[in-house]
Image (cartoon, rainbow, N blue to C red):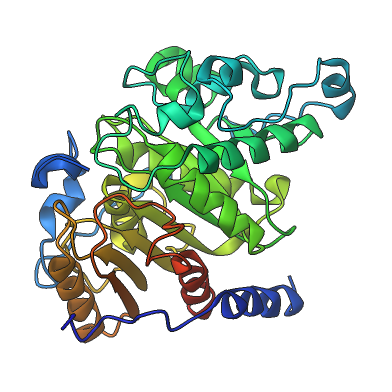
Length: 379
């Protein structure tokens, strides 16, 4: 029998949509256990392996002052997009090279695919899903890859900005590696709350097409706004801290509600979400204390076991056949959070392996709606 904390499909898509509607109306795999270990953990995470060992208070170097050096770049005018040769819709038969060259993706098309791992530019999306590029993942689907990318292409073609650098030009000039970061924006309803979704990849690469784009697309279809973060595997926590800061500071320009946001992640990305979802880590890693912690953290398949009274309400999902993240470890962490009075929900899926992503056509299908409902209940 599965752990007592397991909740199997308690909420349906209607509950997620209804919760978000109420908010708007109210006024607004292979690999071992080391596969998701970061190359460099943030200092705070080394200090709190249990509720009895929590991060120390630290000063806020910026004294709560937003960094205004990185203003949101203006959206490319629709008239300029009209002058471009229209790209054909993306399908599972479209190649990586064709997508990267599409004018709708400008000079950021390369970030749609892993930049820290070889990718065959002549491969179709269907081939990409099956050629071993996305190591540690299961349930990959070239058709889903195409749906996610076509949404971004279509939005860009109508003049909507779909990619936002999180670092200023001066910061990139000082550290060129920061050019390999940014946020892909899947728009939901205007002024709805936002989620930042962090793909896994063992802190070796960013598996966005499997582990963040599908989630962001579905979150946006449920009405919330979603950003998929492209981060550097050697500084994941710093890049997520910068992303939270960027969206919070520019919420009005982006058309999102800055309050009650959520952090999502799978595998390595779940470690990132949990770490920045802890209020003390958030303030330490951003150096600021002027914005609140996430209303909820949504975690898939990770061995992260740190527990603190500063953690956010947490939704967890994992399969029983995961060779990297043990569902019993995740369930035990949820029980520990519950003892601290922190709301949790756990979903365990019989037989699923690591890296099932959005879980379409599996026993996990529907979990994203449940997670959005959990988020809305805890805002």
